Image 1 (cartoon, rainbow, N blue to C red):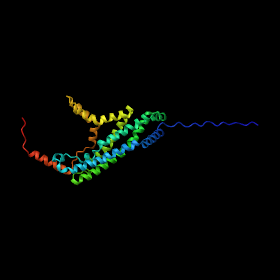
Image 2: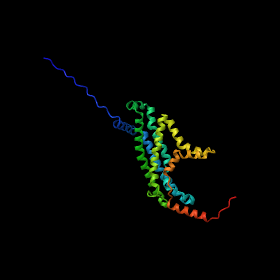
Image 3: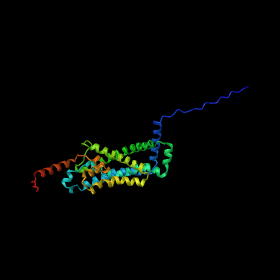
Image 4: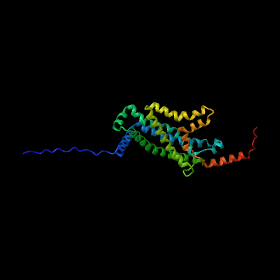
Length: 271
């Protein structure tokens, strides 16, 4: 009696689309990497403390010395940008996080396993950027709102506060958080190019701290070019993102009275 042997046909999986499933897995892995590193929590904690704590401290100091401030300075006082002065220190912490997001993998050798699992370098870099954007936008905007509200509550004792309904205030508060995200992406790009933590952080600090003051030290006949370079630096971009043309309520009165005194004062004739 012959027994018929049947062989099972090999089961072949349908080819997977190179879109959603791959990027979804890479996003989950990058989020896991970000959450399991201590430097993430320390840098974000430093950024939040700098934005909220430094802004509240400077507002309290301004209120404490308010009686000794000249009327011209009171007229030019911008309560919104003053309460967000902590961004100058927070941008360094966020920039360090952006650098370490990629250079830590090169220093530990984990980048080999990452690229072996996902050979598409652009997909890996895009996933890192998306995770970084999601974290820094939420945390940065929330910290800027907290710094603004605390700072204005301190400045309200002298009736020089601003409100979110004033022109340009909401844009400045949200712009401060978005600026941190953009600077962090710049740091991520520097880390991808340099691949060393110390070198990328040094380059970032040079762009943020050294470059804005360089055109002023080297005056040349091409002054317009140096001015345009200075306006394009990250430090000037941060000042532009949080500055408003809204003065404090008492400052408007001081500025108008000062301008009235200047208009009624006799003008000297120039030679």
